[in-house]
Image 1: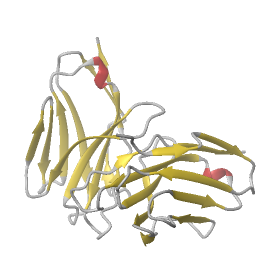
Image 2: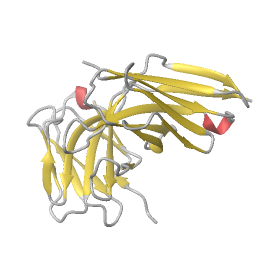
Image 3: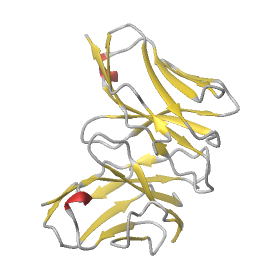
Length: 115
Length: 113
């Protein structure tokens, strides 16, 4: 079946602009995670959704970052007033239920470049 | 504070030989560990996992070993193949009810033909 998809694959924006990154999880997966991977680093957790609600947003770096999942499937990560330090690959993952042994399946990521 | 560490940024191995990738962690509350493989321009792909109640898990050419007292795990690939060339990430989970993953910085494996 279809895996996790993310759009766009690449996004170039100017400092101060607003961006939206989209994630389509595997159908039927209730758990959805956003991670951010900077150059030379491993993915870093941003936020976790269980269904429509954000169950853990402890990884969001500041209030410029916000994410939604209004119908419990597609999620959008929103970044306001982008800064050059926001440049990274943003990864989305989904898992069937979000349990400890539920494997997280990752999408290909969106590479965000802030000029 | 890096809770999951992969101290070797790169590793080169001859085709057919064993590849050993290492990972150390600091948080004794972690109870589930995973290895992911990542090719350029793709997302991480799940490889193998191990629960803290075990010390070994095997899946084909891949074996993960866990040494809880040393807070150390390793991934063995035998025999190594050129298609195994990728970046390997160690991840740990279990300190929160959300089971978010804490990743290491990755080790780039190159298998030479």
